[in-house]
Image 1 (tube, one colour):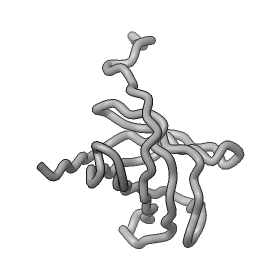
Image 2 (cartoon, one colour; image 1 turned 90 degrees about the vertical axis):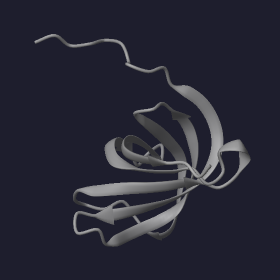
Image 3 (tube, one colour; image 1 turned 30 degrees about the vertical axis):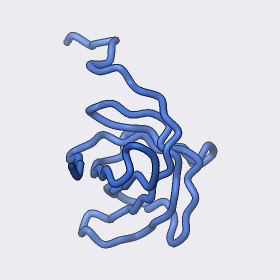
Length: 103
């Protein structure tokens, strides 16, 4: 097998505040809160400084929905699946399955 060592797209660094929601495999809301969008590419993103307003990290499969709440990208929404997360640094890497932009 051939394993690529380079990303398909370069990540762009940012510091945007996002609202996020976590859903279980049955699409039920299990947690929500705010975070900071640290970087993004057309394929995914990394959020950090996660603060839960309700719920906590699920103990089974989950999906993520986030919406940028300010700046030039306000209103952009993304849905995806977690690639990896670290409770110690309160960060989450997400692979997008949908990206919504209101023009």
